[in-house]
Image 1 (cartoon, rainbow, N blue to C red):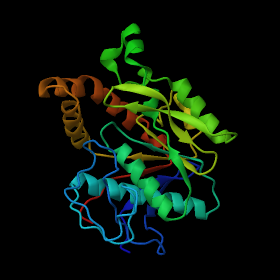
Image 2: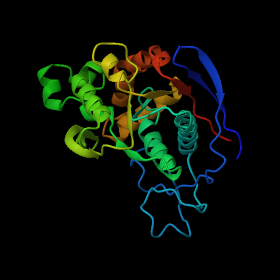
Image 3: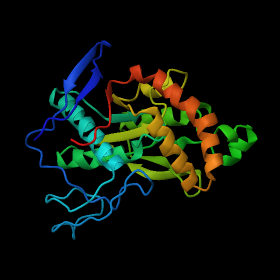
Length: 288
């Protein structure tokens, strides 16, 4: 298999290392059917077909190559997922325990899609995945945001129930019993409690903007993440994606652009400032 791009990682002593990212030689060539991937602008598949996919759940990895045309963003997400999986497999092979795998990066970087791909690839490598518990499940409700007069900053760090998120990660780490995690419904624009069942065994993937944020609550949540990967994406690309996302959810282009400039941009800067607190930094690659 071709060698993947170099990724920058930090060891436990904070030193910077350059690791050549390569999937295990024994792992089959990666091919996906993507109809069960997140239904947003993260992934665009114009057509998908496999000879053996009829009896597989949608979104699963197929052992035979599908005939699919992926967008550049889908290729970038797959590249990031491959790099993350390689780093996880390397740590597991060295005897490290990973109960909680964190994916962080600025809004609009494709974390939800990457998390789904990482889960699929790990399972094909015979690594048990318990589920995905997103940070976005801890958005404050719109009613609470209105009461606190911060609805116009929805998505900023202080608009999340961070101590609730920290408690969830602690319970997942304890593995004493199955845990129900909340999810965020983008159709309702609201968090929905007890949406995701997390078993006591397997890797739990959590993804969100502020997993490396060095402030009370966030700092404690970071302590429950065994391996944290920051997805580094060019700011101009992220800004374009966010405008498109806000338009897709009902804002006119002018309002979408205004929200990105006034709300998303400061959050993007915050995420970039704390990227060094991640264990590894990977960048999307296309045209490999």
